[in-house]
Image 1: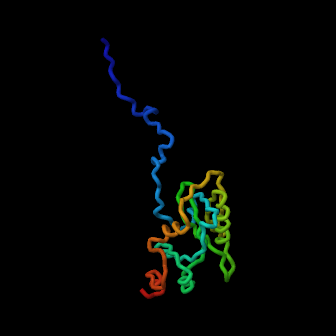
Image 2 (image 1 turned 180 degrees about the horizontal axis):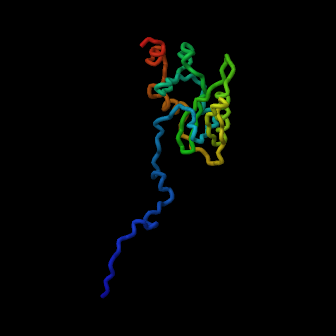
Image 3 (image 1 turned 90 degrees about the vertical axis):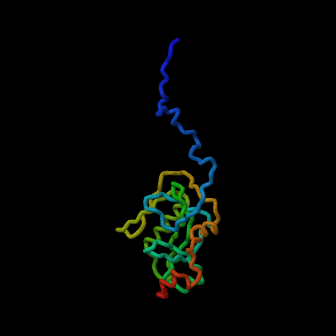
Length: 191
């Protein structure tokens, strides 16, 4: 009778390491959208903008620069603090990596000439409805440069309505609904 020594299996055997297709799908788990930043696109990311008018809205924002916090302000309050708010069109956007965000695209000013930063930001957002774009600041030209990606991949959009998206973005205390709001009180020197 002949005995063979058993050798340990090779831990680097490709058959033992190979992942099956669909492995990364998280077994049907749903990814929850718990945070939705309100921000310009990252200058290193290619983004798309949802083309549907139902997923955009004109509104007033109040931005605290030092804290990097953005608040939404209803029209009745915004009219009382016009120097503190800026008017934007909020547009649902997503990066190639699937990170959703709301892009506050500046509106043309009513009382003065528009600037090239705002003009090129609007052009980039419009172009991003149909193509992946990257938006980078060009300090010398005082505008944004818009780069179009070669990718034709379809974006993956959150399955949420505009009210749901706004609630996620601003529902955590980022709605200024009166002049008594602590942020307004601070800005007006009352507290």
